Amino acid sequence: MYIEKAGNGNLGLARVLGLSFVFIWFFIGGLAHFLFTDLEVKIVPLWLPEHRLLVLVSGAFELIGAIGILFNRTRRIAGWGLILLTIAVTPANIFMWQNPGQFPEVPYWALTLRLPLQLLLLACIWWSTRAPEKG
Image 1 (cartoon, rainbow, N blue to C red):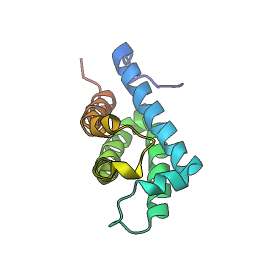
Image 2: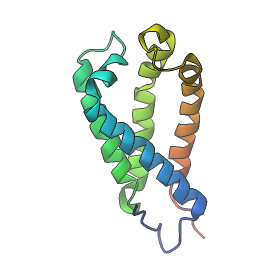
Image 3: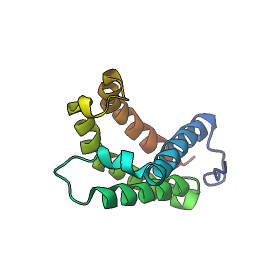
């Protein structure tokens, strides 16, 4: 995987690992929206319109964001985009948690952990894509 250096210095191992995690998370997640569209459509809350379109658009944004964080020039804006996207898909996570019977393949504990883990994901996106410190 290619992760461009920030400014004149190295990103550091921890930040490269954070970026790598975020990239893999959203790249695989984005692909899943296209490879398993019917499954992804099931997790969209009933009150939202155009389930299939929402799945495909969010999958495209996941892929665009994942690729965007690889380059210093687009990393910050891609990071903010992934933060907004993660917040936007929170209703799907809540819907799954509130309706575990519709998702028997996912253990309830995983549905419960998904929400607090989403906060950690948001922190990782912000931390790994923030502007490099001067100095």
